[in-house]
Image 1 (cartoon, rainbow, N blue to C red):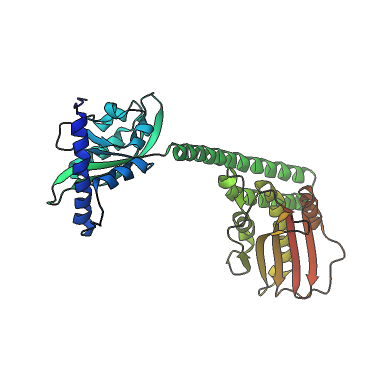
Image 2 (cartoon, rainbow, N blue to C red; image 1 turned 45 degrees about the vertical axis):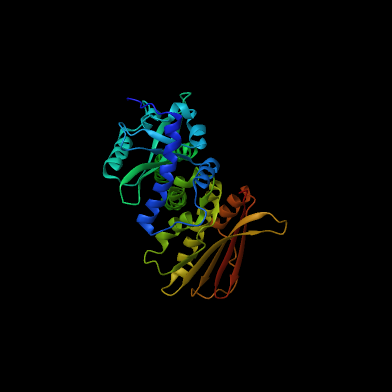
Length: 362
């Protein structure tokens, strides 16, 4: 790179021209935007106060040198004005700068187009930062190209957050894969044990519950790294096999989130409710329906909790609660108790109503 020496006098002269170019560019694009009081002083004050790093380059000089930079540009790069003026912007590039992004810049300069790129730049002390660079041409009153405007913004934090998110998602996919294998192994062990003990119906019931847990967890792992998951994903996955036509179970509660550790008890409880509905409740005939909704609320002690309501309608008439609660409900209540959750059951004449409530931290 051949740096072009520029004197202080030259440097001062260029912003004056650039002010005219800004006005001209606006006029060429949007009509006349001149306003009373427009002056070089306003330009200087604006450039001094803005937090965005800004520079102008001259396409008519060899190697497209920088002819103006503001104080924010100096702070961002660590270079002083005397180290910047007269140099091509590539002095901020380094070994890990993406050449494809540099090529996009060269293409925009050649075609006199606006471009927005993100590339890794290097400060004077050798440290790096991710630069969101916006560049575009500036024309004079006659439409002749005068300068290229470049604004730089440090987006390092955003890039690091993206990298962490990609890593977390990759880990979640790996966990999901391993979890599926674990559920498959458990199912195999249960089947073998059931056959050896001549208890295949029992093994089948256990495997139904294992599969319900698998359906509950699978759609939530991609979000688990965020600390909370969307409840609706798990609920839909659990209940989908029981409503293949999509017209018997109504779901409401989009956007509600909770901790991942609540999924086990939620998944198994909803599975037991759906199994019960197929045998005795709203899904045991051709007309029954189920409404499932979920929301956050505060309990009597002002603690937040997740509430899931299950309401059956149109099934066989219910005369009262069954003589026994059933193994499924017993399992669900035991699991919920580990999370300080509760299971409220009400056998209304037109259908079973159940409320699941689980305290939440986040």
